[in-house]
Amino acid sequence: MDKITIRNKKIFKVNKYQQDSINKFIDTLKPESYKELSSCIVCNKRNFLQISDIDGQGIKRPTTLCRECGYFFINPQFTDQTHKNYYENFYRDIDRDFKTPSKDFYELEKYRGIDILNYIYSNKDLNKINSCLDVGCGSGATSFIFAKVFNEVIGIDLAKDYTKNVEKLDNLKIIHTTIQDNTFDNKKFDFINYCHVFEHINDPIKELKRIKEILSPNGYLYIEVPGIHSIDHWYDGNFFHSLEMDHTHFFTLNTLKNLMQQQGFELVFGDEVVRSVWSINTTSKKYSVSNESKNILGQIKKYDNFYRIQYIKIKKNISKNFSKFTKYVLKKIGIFDLIKKLYLKKKNKKFHLINGKIITK
Ligand SMILES: [Zn+2]
Image (cartoon, rainbow, N blue to C red; front, side, top):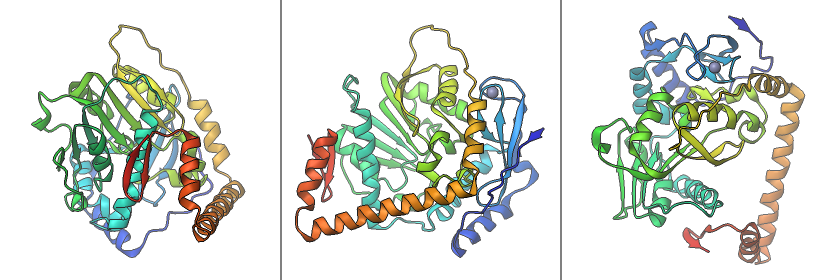
């Protein structure tokens, strides 16, 4: 297979606890823990270019780009069983270095729920949402926020200890399972959330087929993934660090659209962050696969530049410190809450979280 070489391969730093967990997981791996894809799951062709043989943590996880459509994925992948073992027993320790999130972390994660609500309701013509399934709900903070807005919410996650701190609500249920579980047979949801979860899924086609069974005919599927065109935002411009151990595929809005259309979904709206809202395609409209591989390769080459990575890092640090300083000054002179309210009003956002309470405009 043809290869390109990534020059800036500085490995992600992890602490000792995380490294021990990585080592324990690696010890469980055997040749039969992997499966190899012989053709692209989106366009069915085999015209592959290997981008990197290791991931951002230095683990042997080759990433491959399909030159016929731009689908970008890990190959060989883990088998479903290896993948499940990873998420049940290792992922949370490696990802965040704790088994149970702190109260502060949980409170911070609520903003994710608020951001999703503001994004989906930025389109005013959505059908009414009553029931919601929050897949890979993690700390459960987003499920909690959704339960404040929707009538019925189920959050699911494989890591048991991670959901210990979820606040209790009558209309919120947390289950330690995956959507393949028969708990969901005969159940339909108006809204299914995959916020930074879909890129972790082992078999996206199997997942999308199942989503189609449990999504209401007029329902919406929200998918948010770290977009290849937004590496500056998600990974400080460092492409190599975007090759996270936990991610099995990497998308632009277009390459995600190729996969979604093949599985009978249509884009309601979306952007390159990537945040996207999908519905079930009820027409027999023909779709065509668009090829974004050249564009993606161009992006990778642009990102793989030592000086650019340093520049983005410094730029982000300055802007972070500047907003910290501004917040400090505004608090000191007592006008922080007022300025925040004016800012949110100007941004025209429907949902706000002020002192832990959801305010609906
Ligand atoms: Zn392809």
